[in-house]
Length: 426
Ligand code: SF4
Ligand code: SF4
Image 1 (spheres, rainbow, N blue to C red):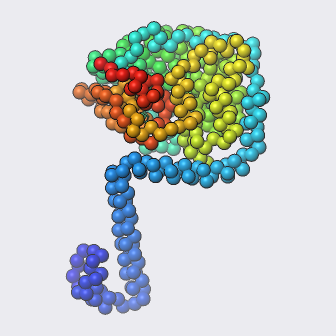
Image 2: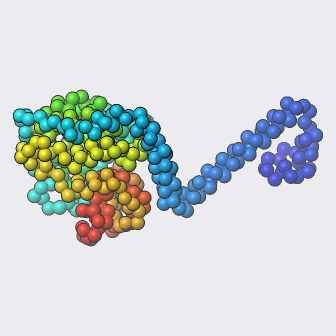
Image 3: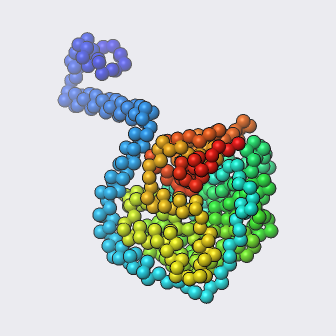
């Protein structure tokens, strides 16, 4: 017998198959050969399916996304009755939470100083900078939860002087930017306070942080006229909302514009009214962000039950402000058109594929590995660390079925920063 490399066609070639059948001496030998053949066929079928899937995704990237979306939405809808049955009593409590909302009176309120962008010319570009993938918390709803290891080592680690060189080149080319720095948690990036101090000389910064650090760390080191803070309250890791809100007030007393936000994660919804009150009773209008992601098979925010949606919508739209009377007016005034547009979109997401979007030109997302992408869903713009890097020259159609980011959807056609409104920039 020859030792020709096996191919399926050989099974139909008598000179190959007959000697092999004759050489079988026992039922055990026959079974072993049949099993080998079955393994070979299964492997081949798997490879074919994998190749077909790859070809399908390359040929119809939009359709592949539609299939994924339909699968998630279908599974979410199928499991909705199970989620509801498991939490019927909770559902009733959530309905009552709106009617029973209690405003705490008599606490000291500290007005929010104006944002650092106020009174300055509009920036040429807005950027989000995910400076690294590392955090001292591990929130269950975090995009990186369970995936930290996947990204470990992928972050660019540069000194404050090296970052200053790259950002100077960017500013020389594009002018001043408004940069929203997130992570992970920016304050655990080595030398972050120094990086922020250098960057804020030519740009306006907003640092999105879990505020696990002491406000004394930045007072006198960062300029409140150039740097603001957006503090995300993560109930499980950060402890009581009262203590967290007091930290926000310390930043405000030092002259920093400081806001707060809370993610409306389904298991935490019963505690949401009390947390909202801890902030608003101190004059802090904490933005309630609808949860985006999966929980118990449900694809949120679409999977919120009626009671969950009623509570989240009520808080997100500021329904609770009325309970504080005239005292809430300054806090309510901090809500803007941009925030309203993003929030309403998240509560009732729509299809964005094909709409013109300025993400990539007027907005970009600088990733931890140095890549600039259009938005959190993708779209490569270039490598920020390369000498010839520049933002895209024009708006382009959105390639994604739905925009999934409350802060980025504002760049789509019809949004407050969309191409139809902002027009061409120099
Ligand atoms: S604090 Fe933010 S970055 Fe850190 S785990 Fe929580 S959501 Fe993720
Ligand atoms: S609409 Fe949203 S998802 Fe689409 S390109 Fe713009 S920012 Fe990205």
